[in-house]
Structures are given as structure tokens and as C-alpha cells.
Image 1 (cartoon, rainbow, N blue to C red):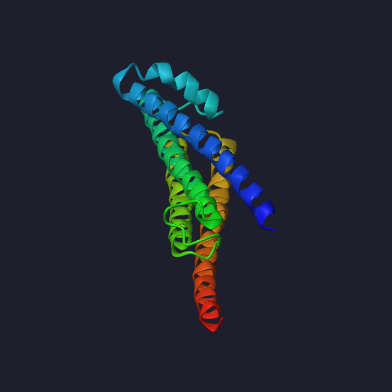
Image 2: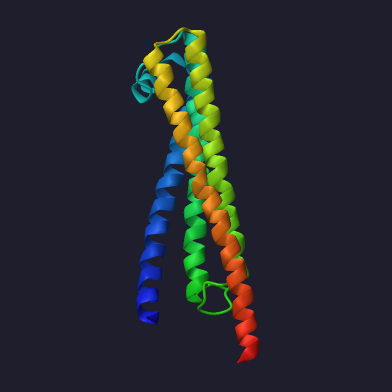
Length: 192
């Protein structure tokens, strides 16, 4: 069993590192786009945004607001997702006993509980960022009298964001289960 966990832990650390790297690259890309929207001719970025957001055809000032909101939300979403992948890698390192903060090869460690709570917080924040961006899109589309289909699609995306909040809540529950597991492990170690 220990060999299987070590192999799984190694692969999880490799994949989480790769996913973390892609998120940092995405954050850099979003930062460049957001900065370009501010410092360069913003209308050059509108075509790119309209490709990302089909059906968007508001007047230029509102389109620039939506474009900037898109890039800023992409940036923060990528940064927080990169941190989530970093924490997942750390959880596997700690659980395998390969980290300085580890007390041995067990998943029931206080550092893992702390990291799970951070993952849950970041997952919820990411969804709240998505909700804010979608609200900007919905209200700006309503102001410029966009099609009902475009508004309805954004409202459906908004509801899917609220459904995705469940991941953060489940992760908070998991953190509390791990805290309870730590207590059980300490109690059983005291009996042996």
C-alpha cells in the first residue's frame, strides 16, 4: 500500500506542478492583456474580446469596461488557481513525509488542514470573481439592449458559478474531517 501511495503522490506532484505552471502562464497572459487595454489602444483588444464573448456588441466604452473586467478576472482566477495547484502539491509532499513541515507519512497533519482551508477559500473567491464579472456583463448587456439570448446565457453561467461554490464548501468540510482525523490519530497513538 505504501508503494502505491508513493507512486500516486509522485504523479500527483508532477501533474499539479504542470497545472500550476499553466495557470501562471495564463495569469501572465491576462496581465499583459489587461495592461494593454489600459495603456494601448483599447479598441485593438475589442476584437479579441468579442471572439471570447460571442454576441457582445455594445458601444465602445462599455465594451472596453467588459474587456478590462474579463482580463482582470482572468488574471486573478489564474493566480488563485495556480496557488490551489501549489497547495495540492504541498499536501501530497506533506502526506508522503517528504516536506520539512511533515511529521511523517500520514495525511492527518495540521499543515494539510491549513492548506485545505486555503484551497477552499481560494475556490470560493474564484467563483465570486466569476460572479462579479458575469454581473458586469449582464448589466452592461441590459443597458445597451443586447439580445435576450445573450442575457439569458449569461444568467445561466451565473447560476453555474453558484453551483461551483459547492467545491469550496466541500473542501472546507474535508478540512474539518482531516482535523478530526488528526485528533483520532493522536488519541490512538496515546493508546499504543
